[in-house]
Length: 114
Ligand code: DGP
Image (tube, rainbow, N blue to C red; front, side):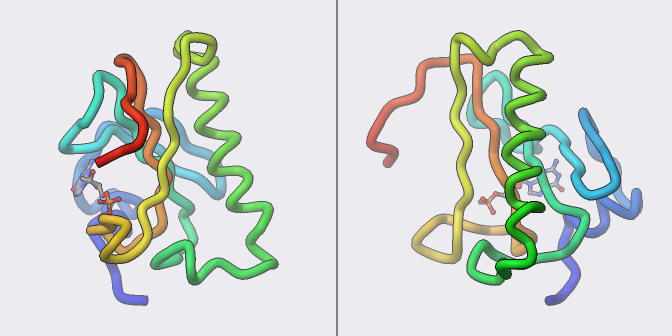
């Protein structure tokens, strides 16, 4: 896949408000927040979309979700609740083609989404 703005954030070529990092996962605040808390969890491995994930990357996908849940617990809003979202391709509303999990919290979320 081609490089994206998230690749530049991983390599520290552009700034981001990083809130969590381990060997495989990076998390930083979304530039255009849709809720009082809006953090993106990305694999350091560059996968363009969820469609590109392989069976061998199942654990990595799980780690993104677990990192989001850990963050919610640590920040104290896990019990109140939050939403995780993965947008995929055009109909899903994906604009950055480096797989990411949105973590949204701090307000009541409507369902179904628009
Ligand atoms: P999506 O539409 O699911 O591909 O979400 C991409 C998100 O990435 C969108 O909510 C805005 C955010 N975003 C785009 N460029 C940047 C950036 O340079 N820095 C940060 N922190 N977020 C960005």
